[in-house]
Image (cartoon, rainbow, N blue to C red):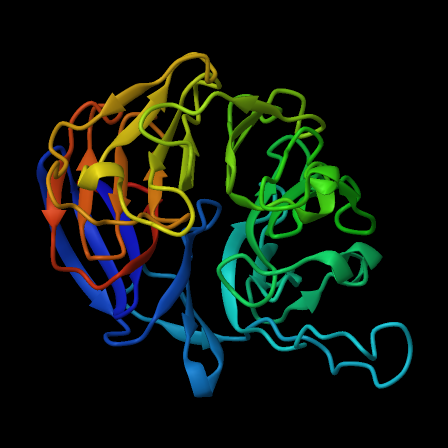
Amino acid sequence: MNTLLAGTRKGLFVIEGAGAGWRIAAHHFAGEPVTQVLADSRDGAWYAALRMGHFGVKLRKSTDRGAQWHEIAAPAFPTKPETGPWADDPTPWSVDLIWALAPGGAAEPGTLWAGCLPAGLFRSVDGGASWALNEPLWNEPGRRQWFGGGYDHAGIHAVLVDPRDAQHLTVAISCGGVWQTRDGGASWALSAAGMKADYLPADSADDQNTQDPHSMAQCAAQPDVLWVQHHCGLYRSTDGAQHWQAIAAPAPSGFGFAVVCDPRNPQRAWFVPAQADACRIPVDGRMVVTRTDDGGASFRTLTAGLPQQHAYHLVYRHALDVAGDGQTLAMASTTGGLWVSADAGESWHTLSRDLPPVAVLRFAQSAPG
């Protein structure tokens, strides 16, 4: 049996099942917006990030699969300096939302990473009891050129920890490109070579520091293979993000927000296309998923079980996930649709049409049964 965590505008749903048999097993934080979740496979802990408006960002943790939750510390910026090079920083030094949560390495129990809006990266070494801002990335001079995509300010929405080396992290920033550290965050380097932004003037379209990767995924079996759904198309790297190769846009569109890759097969990845930029709905009102099985050389358009008329679902960057078997997928939309596939996307089963807008889906460890 699979366990799926769905973070929505009106709470966290725990969904259990397999094949076509799924059910909502629990609903936590009813009415409260959940922006990110993490099911830590190292110790089984669950984390939920909440965006509480006037009350700020909150983090909740459960060590018993949601039977009980308790509040833990949330990432917070230090006080903005009144003097020095960042005294005139127009970016607010306050966390608006937690956009990414990632566990540290297998040999780092208690280590967590949080990517936020604005684009601060935070680290915890005590299971979320406390957090520290990664100052080298926050103080990177290039941050002055970062800017917001859908938000007013740039944000970190992907944090990937190399399973071979926990000191090696890759983060994606919208709009601030892709950055890497190989020393646990002490120093950082841009890693967006090959990406191009058609929303910039031609002479700066290849500026690595102002690229807009919408989402980024890494193959667990071959971590040097990464995929990006960019604002301007699809990209793949086979050398650990040192260079990115553009992928010819598959039908019906190369625009979208979500990408996941097969944890076992570096040649396979899934995307959810939409009409470009200003019109963020499925092309021709048809909900589809595209899949490549050959590293992006070709794609299949998968539609079985998905609405094909008057469908206006948008899938956010974290609302598509694949389980560890590389076959079971889940996808959810801003209009409350939730679908699962047991056959790598060949066919889809509708679990709900009535959820609140879904921000994030994550498979947890399989429940006994």
